[in-house]
Length: 283
Image 1 (cartoon, helix red, strand yellow):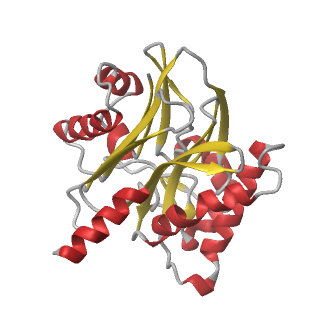
Image 2: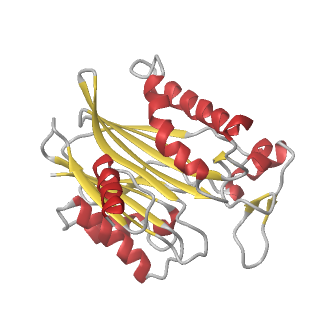
């Protein structure tokens, strides 16, 4: 028991986890009015928890970086686990991160995907979606994503989606140009080659020739009108709209309590998928 408790506290201190359920919070040391909280719950499927996240503030030279990410694995959790450990470090190692941020993030995503596909890592045929957010000195937000995990900000109570849902139906022509196809069977969602329900992802060796690992990137300035940021896996967004999510927590000041409330609301709406959620609040 003591060993498990120590391991749990180490995970909680690091502010990332893949256990179920798990929860935590923290705050900026530079901008006292910025806090973050996260909460994860396992879905009702028979497989192990496949969601991973990062939620922390760290110093880099003379800057404070808020690092927030949701990784939603499929066909196993190895790729999502790898992303949790390596994606942000790959982004921040890019030499032009501070001068050409968008290109640096896209290059780091491609590098990370190439690493995942290296035979020496033995990560199998699984894959993962990702949404990442980097908050620089509480003043600028960098969001990138592959797949259907989502980043939403609230501006004076109005929800605005910063990420792009990479649905196979929206990228059908691109997939077909690479020799793939998009199935659209009755009672099911569109899938790449009849298998994957997203058009872009990390990993997925067996489908990679037809899949993209090019992220969409958005850059947003932080001003007094921004109330909060929500990052969550599709276990939340399948049952809640962007505005419903913002409205659900707009009066909850504690970021951790807000993240937990969103996961509980998704469960009450019969979401069966793994649900992971991060809330960043600007007080």
